[in-house]
Each structure stands twice: as C-alpha cells, then as structure tokens.
Length: 293
Ligand code: ZN
Image 1 (tube, rainbow, N blue to C red):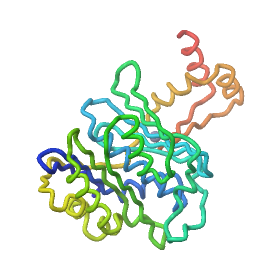
Image 2: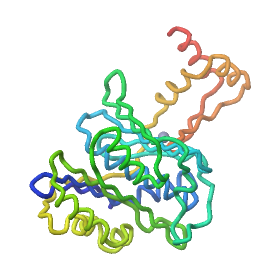
Image 3: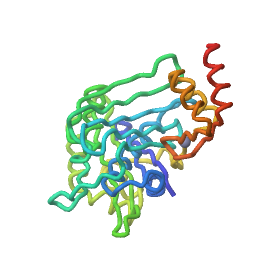
C-alpha cells in the first residue's frame, strides 16, 4: 500500500519523510500512457509533491510542482492535496530516450536543464505562495534540494526513484526528504551524508524491504522515532462543475465556435482523462452565464 512515514531523529534536529508509491505511479502510467522515462520523471515529481503536500496543515491546501527544463518530454506537473494524494501529467508522455551509460533511465536528458522548478502552495488565501529556482540536473531530486535551499532556506537531502520492470510495469517507486533544523551541527550533517552515500539503491530497498528499511538506512545511528504514517494515492478531484468553471475562462468567441459545430463537445481532464460531454445548448447556457459576470 502507498504511504508516507514521518520520523524525527537526533533530538528533533532532523525531520524525515519517506514515501512508497508504486500504485500511484502505476496509475499515472496507465492514465497517461507514459514511456518508462516519462514514468520516472512524472513518478519522481508526484512523489516529491506528495511528500511536501502531506505536511501542510490547512484543510483545502494544495501544492503544485512544475518542472520545465526545455527537454523533449516538456513540462512535468504534479499537484498534491493536504493529505498527500496527488495527480499530475507530463506534456509528451510517449517520448523515450536511450538509457544512460550506467543503465539508468535518462530522466535528466528527457526533462532538460534549461528552465525552472516552481513550487506553489495554495493555502486557500487570495494568492498562492510561489517560489522557483533554476534546474540543476533535471533529475528532480537534486533540483528540489537546490530549490529548498535557495528559495525556502531549508537545508535538505532528497532522493526519488521509479523502478520500471522488464514488462514496463512499475516495480517500485518512492523517495525520501530529510530536513535539517536550524543549528544542526556539522557532525550530524556528516553522519547523515555518510549514511545516504552508503545506502543501497533506493528503489531496491523499497521493493525488497519497504519504506521502514529506508528510514533505518538513512537515519542509522541517529536514534530516530516514527511520528506518523498516512496512506497516499493518485486522486483527481475533477467534476463537471470544475470543468464548467474552466470552460468559463475560455474566450467567448471560442466557446461560440464550439457551440456552432452543433454536436456535443468532449472535454477531458488533463490529470485523469475523465471525459465530460457538453451539448451545444449547454455551451450556450454557459456562455450566457459567463457574460453575466
Ligand atoms: Zn480529473
């Protein structure tokens, strides 16, 4: 089952969250028909959004990560609600690249490095909080670490991974985010760095031993305790009402054009592929509503 486990270590100087998300990434793959490399790029971004979103306290809060590196797969977008349930898409899910010399999927090459990673937190206030930094490698985890330090002044370590099986199904997916509290001493940082350097391949640990084993390896010798656990999943909150709202934002002339075709118009949700049908009459009614605004 997909879930996030949270822990603290070294008398609260270290906070860590680990996610296992095989089903979530498999669902994303099925919805979007992702190639293995697109799966890895989207999967890593979904895991990152879930880890960061689940820590938000506000009931209707959401967190969006956008990665736009100018590479062949285009933009990657992941949105998390405050429970860590996510949805997302990648602009060109079918693109595939040759593997890297070390045998890994070439996520950095597919995403590109000519652009930004943007994180926005919508806490239900007038304006969302938005921050962004230049991409470092397009591998997502490194980019997020650099974002957190530069934009939010939080020193952190992050790893994200998606393991695609020989049959192209997702074997394992997940990651972790470790954050250091202000005043953490050098010894602690050194110990943490050593642990992360020495740990086994992330997706292998998740696949064979589960997320608890990731905590064990990263926080080895740092006396940690688990503070919470939560199930997470792929979930899209779209509805006919939301699609109507989106249609209201379209140019009137375009809406009129759609209505003049005189056949039902199908609008599909970019996050989950759900289709919503609108008759020409319904489109005209919507148009009238829009005019009143
Ligand atoms: Zn949807």
